[in-house]
Image 1 (cartoon, rainbow, N blue to C red):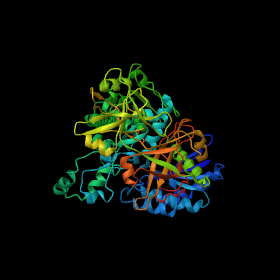
Image 2 (spheres, rainbow, N blue to C red):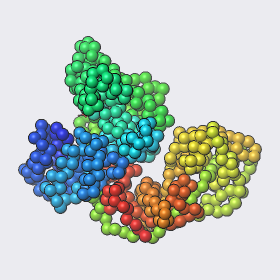
Image 3 (tube, rainbow, N blue to C red):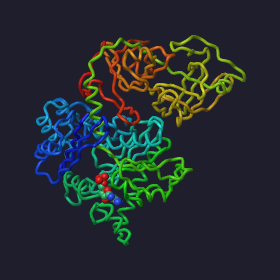
Image 4 (tube, helix red, strand yellow):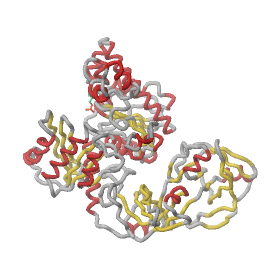
Length: 598
Ligand code: AMP
């Protein structure tokens, strides 16, 4: 698919053409010092024609802010344009040029499908506790929350790291450091963004070229009182005249700053140490958030090129399990999409450097959405939805510790899934705050304990049970189990991700693969609901059935069980390991009502 990517900013328009099937970039250009974005984009067809590119299959536009409504890349329609316009107040510098580019491109190429790819989309998975600012509710109702940016870059880095290590992103905790003129850090836990340093705007977080990053919000009133500055004036200074430029007094180019620092310039030295300190602080915080880190990845002009900055940032992280290798660090010379590792052999944490490829990623997202949009609408049989109340899966050793040496569980009844049964026995689950009595044990025995509760129950227990797929119990909180013969402390408490068990025959009917993500619509009258991010698990032994927990069932007004209508979602990005994010199957925007499959 021949895909034009347009990245329209206020001072430049970058554009590239990719053949996404062969993964080759066939054209690349950048127009600087623009008279206007409109004029620049109007000039693109002539430039492409001069390069022999006369046909396009799709166009992808980089859009900074998709707000809360535009949750994934989507085909551009008038509704989508209106929604991007709604986000202008959140991204006043970035969304207007993107909208100008979209408007001209829709006129230039009326018959070519066009897709908006949002910097914010990858961060839609950030949990509320990380996206919420502790400010009055009426402000939050205006959309004041953490959105995060550089999502396309962080997503690419995640996929590239996973590919390089030969480990699925779903098994990694990655801290992605995009250190360019704009800079952000992202905590990516098992394939999804769980926190990022940029916030409602692209001003929060790290020190940047000319942006301050984190400041005390109290300074607005202080500057107003002492200098008489308006909020707009303070904002402009924080965007344009702060960061490395303000600290160094010698511009924002890290190469010059490092040169001056080496020559003894105190301001340049301070700029470098503040920059590195802030990055270290975020990395340590995100390692804390994820209960550890497997990979720290560097990208962006500074992350890719500054040997000394990478070293400063990675110093004294031995307590995290990182042993840095200075020789490997110094040897990094990126020319293409290499992803060298710069830790010592015995380091548990890997450190990877790679060039970000936002344009390429936008082309991939665009072709994913356009291909999905071209799929003929399909109608699927309904799928049974079962409510999975709290339960535990235990090891043989745990059962013996709780019920006595040599004790064997007794089968109470068989469950829908072949070989699975509910035991007669129950245990009490005890947390630091509360306990849940008589939680059913499900057999057969497992190799690791797994305690599945709903989120409200995790609050009742007083533990922060993470949302996980079954079997992913690493790094989970410790709770106490009580049986008639004793108590035992164990990790393994999770809130189970919703999923569908299905077998190859049914999967073929639906056109799904193991690992796909789908949407399921449940219609119950008053509380109709669409569940997103439902994982497909295919196994010859499985009976087709969707499992949701009691919180989800209550939200959808399902008492014991019900029927759902499936809506598949394309999740795979060509040539690179699978990714957990998707868009509506028909490529339509998340604003559009999801079509019923009944
Ligand atoms: P980006 O926005 O990703 O293009 O990154 C631009 C930043 O990368 C600029 O501030 C440059 O100072 C920095 N940069 C580029 N090359 C080097 C280098 N060799 N050493 C240090 N910083 C560099």
